[in-house]
Image (tube, rainbow, N blue to C red; front, side):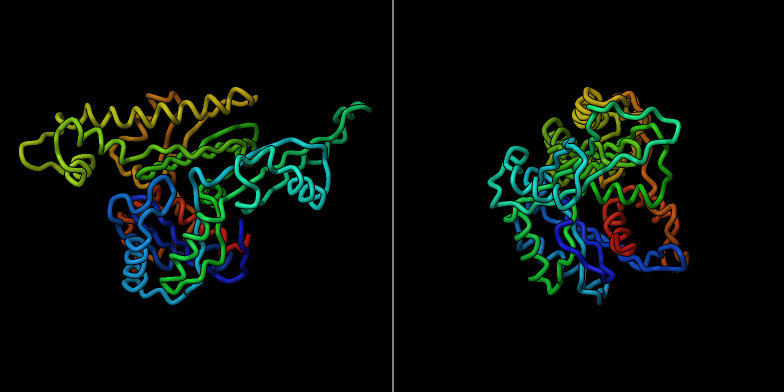
Length: 361
């Protein structure tokens, strides 16, 4: 989004729980997975999309790059959270040059930040040409188009730039989490006309929601809740430390704990996430002609057993795990097939970043 490049790039996803890395390369008319890795971060290193402990992130990223023998120093990353604003507006159809001029003049009415403190970008969506037998527009009806305005705080971008520079990497492209998820979907699935669906990426402290309508982003929201909220419910109610609560959340029992001790608190945390996702769908559906018909679930917390089934029941929308490797070639001699299947929803965001750069979009 904010920077452009034509070189092959390595995708780096800095989340609240871990750093994920994905490297793809062209193979015929498709893409092949070259490398994929993940390293955990100390608690609170990244909170709500903001790097709070740069030293810890730098150390983890250095270790990841060294362990994986990454030679390509040019990387693509993405950001989310309160430092990012995405606003969709409708305007009379004009050229991209006029849209750019309009946004630069009027951005303050759409962006709740000092305009000097953000980087701005936009994407215009024009209606396709009318069918020959379609009714012509009324004489006084002005043709409209949608414009997606994106703003990201410069200070947040600078922190990410400083981190990768310290590791000896070059940040060549910076995107948004929700758009990376859209890219992962677009590469692996076919869009269905006249439908709306949501991609819900549940991380440690942040849940990204991208609602797609007729193959374009219609509504986005970054929610400051995630898998850590579930761990905190377990921690609070069972009087254990956070790391112990994380293990219990993932079904690793110790001492005298049994699964039935964990389930009520696990569900309490999940219900909190489901409530926020349902609220997000309601906000979208209030202003749309469509209802969200399906949810594709991704992110590190998608590893929770049965989370998609609970979401289906609590939100009332069919929820399925996102398969981010469907149309990517995997060398079975290099990667274990069971591990790849398990990591498909977890790696959706970095896969979306790597796909974008490999395809030079």
